[in-house]
Length: 254
Length: 271
Ligand SMILES: Nc1ncnc2c1ncn2[C@@H]1O[C@H](COP(=O)(O)OP(=O)(O)OP(=O)(O)O)[C@@H](O)[C@H]1O
Ligand SMILES: [Mg+2]
Image 1: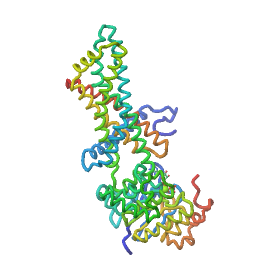
Image 2: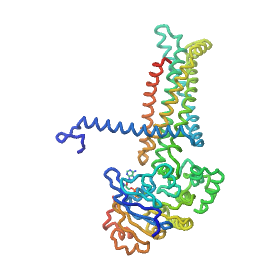
Image 3: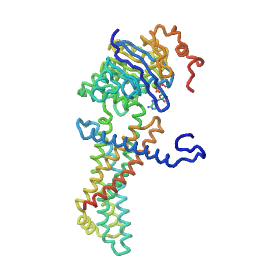
Image 4: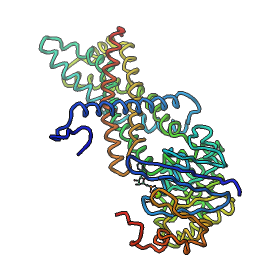
């Protein structure tokens, strides 16, 4: 078995009495695409933030490329982040910067590239997500939600990371734009040979981009398998989620 | 209610537990603020500096505060002259108006008024901006892109405020004294030349420097409170609004407290 690029071992995280993660075990192999399903508020975003070191787990370990990075700070943490891309659920574009400065942010700040070179590379990357050079000098507030998602995607892939996190990349988009985003994810992951962890509750998107699917429920991974077996999981929770039924073992959060 | 602060029998709060919990929370808050201030100051003092951000903040904090500082100073100077004149009149001391105006403005009011006005304009603005960045995950995004928020966001604001406040205060001093002169000459029948000569005779370098040193400290307080409250803002428009309010009130109170402490210090050392 190849060395996983990312591995979470017994990760726990609570906010006061709200025990969000209660021992998450999951791993991703290089070049593979893992989709994590889970209801709203089940802790999917918290899981990603722990993996990225934006939150520190209360217990458990995060391994990146076989190395324990759970408590890494400073240089060691930056070395990891330089190899990881993240598409935030809200896009999280910097609204004081233009589109191209957003896309090239890491090149301009951490890598100290010349502005003209960084701009050129940003426009190249924008092309890959089907955005023309005409949007480069606009501000994030001046473009549509779907375009913002694509800009955020461009920002996540510009440095050709080894691992990319997508937090609900298709939420809030029309089905056609959503599918275009799915295609972009598949294309970019294939082109880069990167591993991907995608969080979603959009089943169409999950089926399309996943090699493997896992389900997060009550703070644990309760099922995991190849994407082709999602309809024969033999797990009531997964079945309920896949078919989007309100009655079943998962109680809707009201 | 069944927490430690209520007694089992009557439901009256146990004052000791209440005070204890309050004190612990206060110390924890002071600890967090000190840690935050220390990290910000360190990032501000040690290279590499983000000069692009610093310049942006100098414009935002310094340049755009000129109108509000100038207007406040002219009115304070004018009111001060009027009050000293009325007060001095009672024992025939109205000729001291120029002396007391220039002393009051340079040592005290120029810096305090600038500090208070910027606690409103700048602190609340910084808190709202950083709070909005926090709740829209932009601060998390900064970190994942290997940009340290202390270097990229907080240090430039801290430096810009500490550098521009003295300049603003110097301008407030000049305009404040001018406000006093305007009122004295046009409403109180002072002779313009005599008034100006008295002002210049009584103006000392020490008094001006006292005001400028205060300004540097006020600048630090103003930027730190904005950044700190913004960075721990909770989600939503209410959270950001609350951060802005808290930061502004905190900065205003701290500016006044620092002013008193610094005044005491300067008096003690005989300046
Ligand atoms: N910084 C935080 N402080 C306190 N509680 C938090 C914090 N972040 C998340 N939570 C809580 O953790 C739980 C899981 O949140 P999370 O954002 O991970 O959900 P999610 O699975 O991503 O949901 P969605 O699909 O709606 O995005 C929620 O109950 C939330 O209130
Ligand atoms: Mg989420």
